Length: 275
Image (cartoon, rainbow, N blue to C red; front, side, top):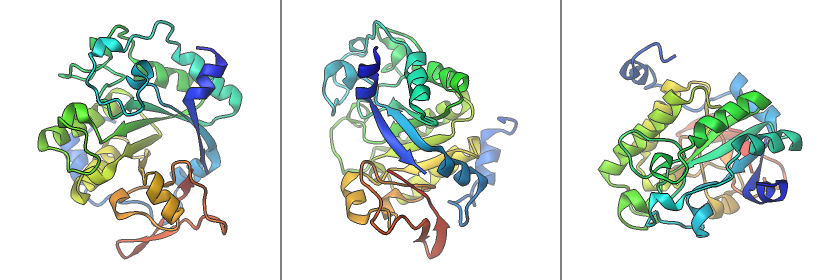
């Protein structure tokens, strides 16, 4: 992939031990919530200021932005895959963090997910893209992050933006997020998209699950385009709570600038904005 192709696929983001068993860590995380003051992790995030996002998935090969996962896994078949090049160019651009679409709405995973047959292991190119991404980020000193889409017609059995996800698929979501954070250690950032398709209790469960494994990981529940255009980061949408950062997709902060002190659940939280 040449530089022009890479840049066309990289969306710019501006943004300001497994020692204990998982069940014990989950229990200890029951009171974990978004910060009420500026923490060292949030301060580091604000200092990063510039990152890139790599939307590389099944739809790269079908040409359909809303790929529903109805094509065979073998459709994914990159012939000149060079993840290190992606990150090298990001480094040359001055990016300080990078986010990889580990799973988009097609349901196709860029790693070999255990007990799952719609991923790179079942495709024409079995490279573990997540592992290659993490290694390249370490090499170039870039903070790594993952994107995971809740909307998933392949696993839900239908394409529906608004219906709640089935129980069996929600269990898969938890298992795959656990895999990402145990197999690929210390991601700095985790974005969950289309989070209105799960209940508030489920969002809290996923937030605390991620924090129990990766306590210093920034967890972001995406507010989505129209919601962000409406609120411009002045509030956090209920369907995007809990979150560590107000994510505005490609919308800008309000003219008066972003105030990170956001009132949620009757408490002021410190939440920077990412656009």
